[in-house]
Length: 196
Image (cartoon, rainbow, N blue to C red; front, side):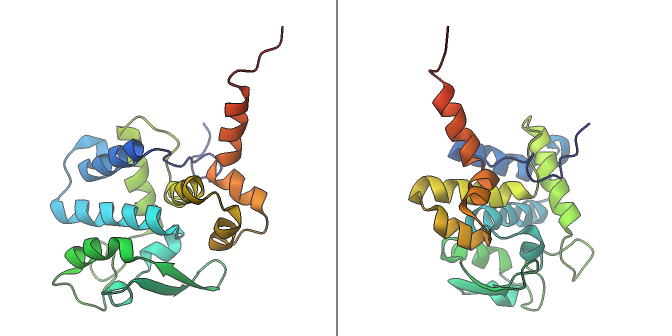
């Protein structure tokens, strides 16, 4: 069996319907059994944060409440590249405000059930793959959030240079391959192609 952790085997969610289906599956929890309300809210916000910012999961789980509270723009130092990056989060401001109400600012935004520690990247992987399994998708993993962001950003703006910079990729073709655009274009070009 092929490991799903390889980010090239993970796909973006290509439609708003797929995103909504994933949100519902995340709320439902493992094998469709209802998840407690606070966990469901945490997990859905984590997913929304990932698909709207393109953050790597390692950077996502380490966010503290004080970094996002009442902010339009979040500034982080990326764990993988150690580069400073500004991320617009205004589209999530109401979701964040509702989620953090009454919580201590020094705590992690996506806190583990074990107390003042962030949820692990392994747990995020499980949350997403369990939701993927529930909707019959074996191509879901932590990179799905980042790829979904990239896919939809590209579809809306058609600017691979901006995405390349956001993702800190060394070449545009890496970005296109990462978000699955190149394969979509290849497949579309072959729809009406037939010889003989």
